[in-house]
Amino acid sequence: MIASAEWKQGMEFEGRSESGHSIHFDATPEHTTGPSPMEAVLAALCGCTSVDVVSILKKKREPVTGLVVSAKAEQAGEAPRVFTRIMLTYRVSGGVSQKAMEDAVTLSKTKYCSVSLMLDKAAKIDYEIEYA
Image 1: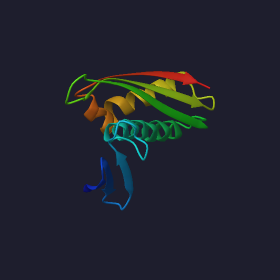
Image 2: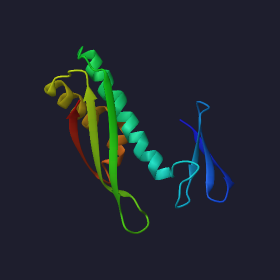
Image 3: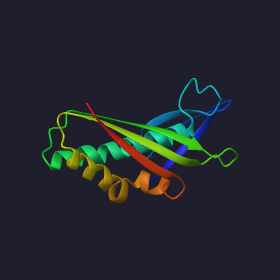
Image 4: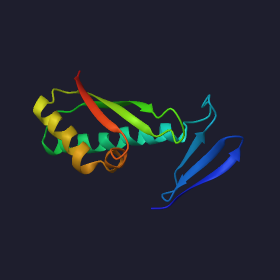
């Protein structure tokens, strides 16, 4: 896997992936033109675990019709401002059984989500599940 970031102006950068996609990073306090790199990491965690959970639920033939994963993170007070705690909230809809959802989230957290497994080395990651 290959990625790069190019300085554009001020504290704005364009990240590029090997697959040809780009993301605009804004490291100013306002973040008006894009996410900060740390916000992007948090969004990547949400995306990674979402992929796992939906895939697992579909394999179990659970009637999932929607999933939103949100994250709230705390950071260290001084540099490096690594994440120290992350709370993930899984909001699932479609009549998915509680056991299937718990199993899917646990498998994502402990086995499949590479972003979660990396971040788990620095931050305590907790979760809650809401059923819509």
